Length: 140
Image (cartoon, rainbow, N blue to C red; front, side):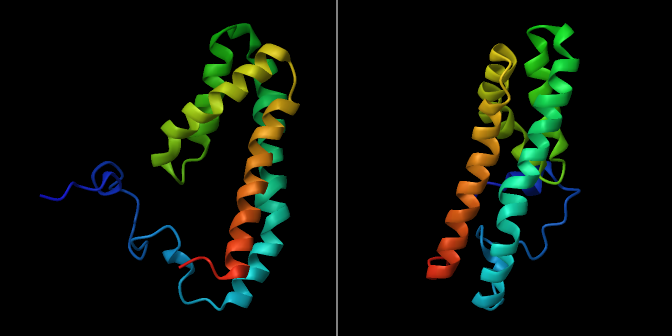
């Protein structure tokens, strides 16, 4: 008996029509030249600038303002950041798990560079790898 898909069981309000069966289904049918152009344009924006803005807001602005919560400040900051990505609610738990160490270190060391290196740094790395994969035709 096949297992039910969590997105169909828990996230019934989100339309998944046309989502396909793989992580790259949404790019099927587009010419490689358009994908490469789009990725190269988006690379500095979604690969670095937007995550940097998120870090400046969540860790640079918000975290110091909730420091009075003491140990709960990094927990609340991580949860708010994770829930803020409301368009992908199935990623909230993984964002909490993977972002908390960086948020805790930023809070403990009072050094925003830690989360900037982690969040925009990994986003830029992954966007670059994805762009290279599309250029080389590695994607299915």
